[in-house]
Length: 210
Length: 161
Image: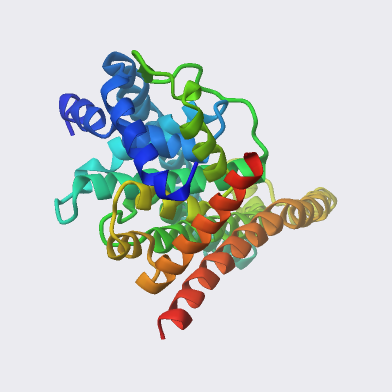
């Protein structure tokens, strides 16, 4: 096929496709409209549940810390847990703002792809941060939780408390280090490479037009 | 968006969606990409404000979804398709039997994700200025890229002959 014929062949095929391609509207309705409603709901419900659970924990910890405010050994870690919990809520809300806000009208394809890549990087970094915060959250929430619910002073049961800390910090950090290094860091690097490619496309374009 | 409006929108742009799916995916995964594009159009329609041509807007959504899907598949090395049946079928035409168009699609398949987008828009008669605005590159760069794509396709056709 000669290249001059390229468009002709394409347009002839277009005509054939246009007149012979049949859309199954029933299948389209079932597959897209109905599925989209339920699929879109799942992540949203997951994030909402996350926010509710963390909020309840934060409120309960905050109340407990206020009650024990005259005993800093309980209230200080309690308030630290509240701050970490609030950070969790902030990150979850940020994540819940999904990619559905992409501006397909004003942005170009390269800009949209850059936006998607930056969003992916942000989510991956948030996940890393959440993982890092988790052991600190657990450690700081333990004393106030035990004293409020069981009236048990973990500082008097130091061996149990130390066991908890060593277990959580030791295993937790090893796990976090491994997951971050082998999963999130690799993913972030991949997205950054793609972002670099896009930037290079744009840069070449600018240098040529100058 | 109401369902009837959505169905008529897809009906009017079915060939565009079909061509993009065909260019970015092998037959195994085409149906999955088709599904993702349709869902993306359905979810984004409420934000369409008529400032650009509807076909350009659909092109942008479909191309972006195709590029993201293509990249995701490369990274995750997903092979198996989840969706079994397409919403599209042919009544009296089998493009797979059309040797010339099959050859053209096979050559397009070898291009990178941006080159695919450019050649599809070019073949669908978009001007260089319009292609530049949709892709986000300068008009000069688009013209250079089109020449380079043509050279690649020519080389590919010659090898196949």
